[in-house]
Length: 107
Image (tube, rainbow, N blue to C red; front, top):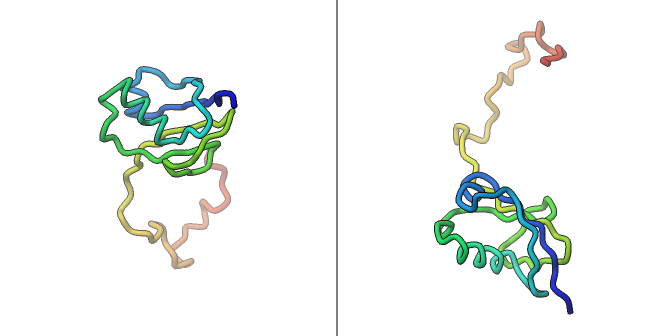
């Protein structure tokens, strides 16, 4: 079997530490996302301990995901913010909605 070609995309702290936005690399068949992360941490030990969520071809994946030729892998940094509540922060009582702004183009 021949090696698989993987497109790698980096964001936020991973991009800063590696000094680039993307790579195209070849790996042996059976390579997982965890294997790729291990190779990146060998290259850049500062990556060790960073938290990330992997994505393959724009779908969340697990570190154990086996990659196929042509896959795109993204290491997504954690996202923070919000109030910690799952409830939306807008009026739910229709009488409290200012209808002057309903349907207006906000561009």
